[in-house]
Length: 202
Image 1 (cartoon, rainbow, N blue to C red):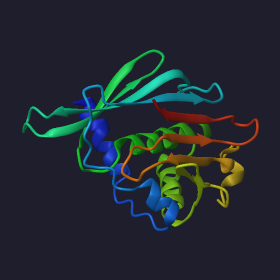
Image 2: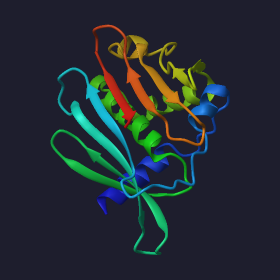
Image 3: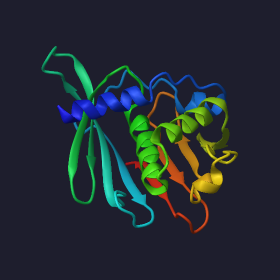
Image 4: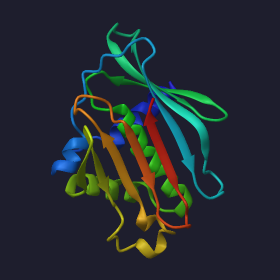
């Protein structure tokens, strides 16, 4: 029940995204309906930052996207399995054709980490990230793919109170629009606060 609640919160928090512009459109491309092998798809998960109460660094974690059958109606659903250095948890179910749960997980991870490290409002942080993904960003071609980058707080009026998070950059390494995002990265610049979340498709 708890994992279902977490999935519902994730879906509600990031619902209604309608990006405008090439960078946002590329990140939020429709990658469903998903069709996964038995092992699913796995991203490495690494989180680092300053030592503060409530903040959980992760050295060698992972996030796995799997497909299962919902026992309530026998329909296929998606589930996430998060492995940290100390625990494992399952999040779901998510609809097979309801967007990218890995992207949703990443954005919420960054939102909650920033809120814990700054004492700021998750609602405010989430909305500023949504605005950045909707309104701007830039995309650069790279080999057979591209990289989309966003700076949600670069011009924020509250930047002086963000403890260095005004430099936060969100980067997404993309290939074929129908394929999973290869890398998701959130990183601040400079020694403070030294925050990094990185997920790489294995």
